[in-house]
Image (tube, rainbow, N blue to C red; front, side):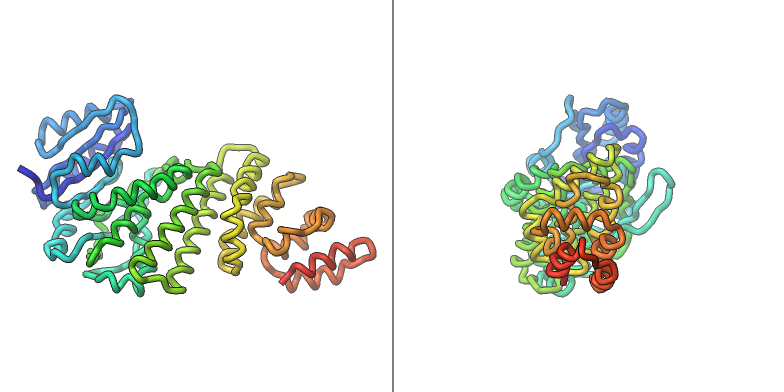
Amino acid sequence: MSKCVTVYTQAYNVENYIEQCIKSVLSQTFQDFEWILVENGSTDKTREIIRKYAALDERIKPDYFDVNQDGFTNYYIAEKADGRYIVKIDSDDWIEPEYLEKLIAPLEDPDVDISICGAVNYEEETGRETPHEYGELDGVYSKSDIEKQFIEMRSYMGTYWGKMFRREIFCSILPDMKEIGEKLKKGDNFGGDVAFALCYLGECKKLAFVNERMYHYRIHNNSYATRTIGTNRVFSCLALRETEHHFLHKVNAYTEQNVIMVDLLFWQNIEQLFKNIIRADWDTDQKIKTISEVCANKDLQLLRKEAYNSKVRTILMGDIAWCYMNAGNSKYLKNVLMLLEPDIFDSISNETYEWMRENQILMSYIIMGEFDNAKRYMEEITTGNNVDYIRELQQRMH
């Protein structure tokens, strides 16, 4: 007999956490569910723990992989799930007892196609709990509400958990997700959860938000997001931005405010990539070289020229200042500076560039965007030896 809800969890080397996850699911006040629990080639005792609980509760439908796999999840769910609704839970997280009950309640309205709740972040190393970066939405919203509510709704779209999906819509968007996934794959699949959530949202008639923090998200220092530090990630950031723009068009929410929001999120993703590179266990020159390779991406440079504003500068400024202060004579610095100030560094002569980079006070003003101070400072230091450099630089400054 088919169940009402299919819960899906994929577990890999989580022997310290999987039991808490299992107990939270089996303790749900809403009992009509099946749980597809994939043990994905673990090398610790995860499989043993799953076997123990699967023998005790027939709602658990375990599957055991001999080798760890990725990229199969959504099609696997579409093939295996019997429930009318689908819920995903990470194997190191846990949920409140009324999680399923409260998420399914709004879906009794046939026009409501997704139910979303809040979450709590649990920092593994400190035991500290803080609210996840969600908004405070509550109640049912129509697709037409997305235009005015997009900024707050977007805060919920960074994860697949904390949501209950209708199976028929979940399955119907998989062909579109396959195309998007090919683009994200070039960048280590960063942004896949956001892309899926937006793709799904584009098919919804109504959206329900339950303003309760019922999902507990465990944060590790070695989480996936902090490990994806290669230059390829920029391709995922670009693909995700394209997906978000397409979504805004599809739901008639392509307003100036919403577009600015999407583009600022894009640059925040680039900033986070820079921070991950700076934190990597590499020597300084390798870090600056890697950031330079990201900055050299032609699509990224084009977007920066289109988005020449103070907000983007503020997002990028700190990491690029770090590059300048630590670059020494690195040949990779100019590409980095070019992303911050394309109008200055894109076509400036090598002679003027070398003179500039030797003057820390001047470069500090430029990196901080304090052009009036930079101009006053150049007036103070002008000599016959540097007047040509200063004249060229002044022509390029706004």
